[in-house]
Structure formats: C-alpha cells, structure tokens
Image 1 (cartoon, rainbow, N blue to C red):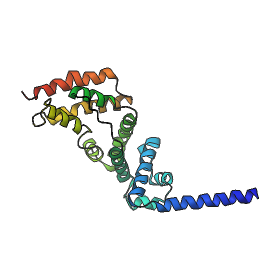
Image 2 (tube, rainbow, N blue to C red):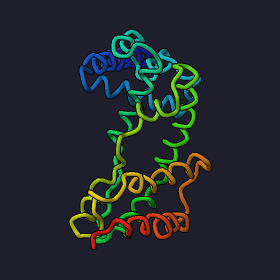
Image 3 (tube, helix red, strand yellow):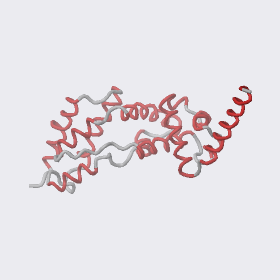
Image 4 (cartoon, one colour):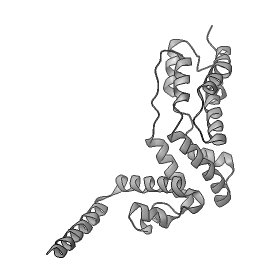
Length: 212
C-alpha cells in the first residue's frame, strides 16, 4: 500500500513538473532560459558552459535554446544583457552630487563583484571564440551609460553640474575606475578608495565645468 502510494505520488509530481514546463511560454520561458544561462556562467565559467548544460539547468530541451540563439556566444551575450536589465542598483538621493556618488559607488559590492569576475572570463572567452576585440565585447554586453543618469540629472537641476558642458569621459570615469578595481581584486571597493575617486578625481574635474 505504501509502495503504491509512493509510486502514485511520484507520477503526480512528474506530471505536475511536465505541466509546469509546458506552461512556460514566450517572455517567461526566455527569461527562465537566460537566468539558467547566467547561473551556469557564474558556476562553471564561459569555457565549460554549453548549450546542453544550460538546457539541463533550465529543465528543457537543447532545441529550445537553438530556436532562440544560434550558438553559445549569442546565448551568453543575451544572458549578460538580461542580468544587467533585471538587477538594478538602488539610486541614492542624498541631496548632493558628492553624497550620491559616494553612496552609489559604495554599493558596488556582492552581486557586482560576481558580475565583474564573470565578465573577466567572458571577455577572454568571446575574444577567443568569436574573434571579437575587447571594445566590441564591451559594446555588446555593457550598457551605454551606467545607472547614474538620475544622479546626474538631479545634480544638473540643483546647479551642481552642467551636463551640456561636462565631458562624458568625466561622468563615466568613476565607474570605469571602480570596474577596473573589481576586475583586479574581485573584492568590494574599500571606502577610502571610493572617497579618493570622488573627492580627489571626480569632484575637481566636475568643478571645472560647473556653471558660474
């Protein structure tokens, strides 16, 4: 009786799992596939990730992946873009540009360190696999602007910065430095380093273009 009951439960669970997989359609299915690809990328790295391993993690057939992405390179790029689009940083509002930048850069830890470490392997993997240059990989997987537009827009409204005059390189410089540090150390940025970037580099450069 107990054996029959256990078998019946197993059959029911299997049928439920099959119905769950069948219910995934369109954007929901694609999101599940991209999340599986991202977790596989973090766990095993670019070199060991395969279309088959992602399909197994997503509990689907490999043909489902190939209907959406022609190869592993395309899947990895899509997974990284999906991660960036669904994992936003909390945008601070301290009342000053300096305070906002310190808070924003200080929040680059944990998940972003994992992202930086993963990206390091992806860059070398895509360059070798697809014959891309570092600039081409960056253009494909990283957003055009960091998640700082709100910070700069508020600073512009307060008169702390003139977005029509300040060079774009000045605005991206703090984030480039933080990204470089994370790629070199795979650790969160120390507070003293954040303050040095903001107070010794960013704010003096911003001051040059500040409205009179």
